[in-house]
Length: 261
Image (cartoon, rainbow, N blue to C red):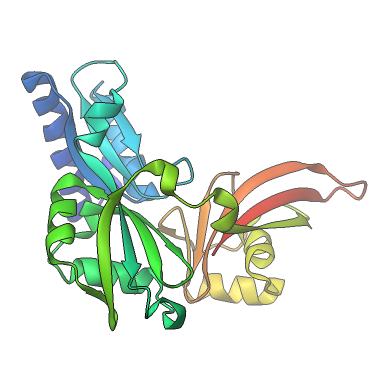
């Protein structure tokens, strides 16, 4: 994406990342940048490629939507210990007595973190399970604050502890797989399949500016999508257009969607 189309705030974000890239080379060690939404990552990657900078994106697990940009001193992949020195997983759980009654959401957990004074750029994906616990990928500086100060989420007391990637729930517990056929890979058709909407309702949601693809507002029902993109529909959640798997005898395309729980 050309820099000329970015807002002032977006340009400042890209400039900050380029400054970190320069610092990584000068200091000879990895520099950890902010967590980026997919559309922000696309701006950053375009700028980093233009300046021939070395970088990696790390979200904590393959299906992560938000990823931290790691600026590298050379073309070598960062070692696991380098990543661990900058980023970590935390498990936040409602206490055992209240857990059966809790129905906490992603918004509840994120709101509690922002209430500590953290910024969205400090926090990656939040994986919520059973309404009573969440695995949260954060910068180490944010983890120290959370471990020290986070006592409640919503109206429930919680405990916080570091955890490893091995403790994350399996992908099957994070989403429901949806299989369907569509006439084309238009946004309105795939949105209809992902959220069990009529085609007209999907198109209306797009026109009402309720739909984002990879964090970018989409207003054209006929926009063509590529597998791998993330769709969000306000009030309905998120889904990943996972794959297109050939055509039926009638010329319709088989698609696979992962509807996030």
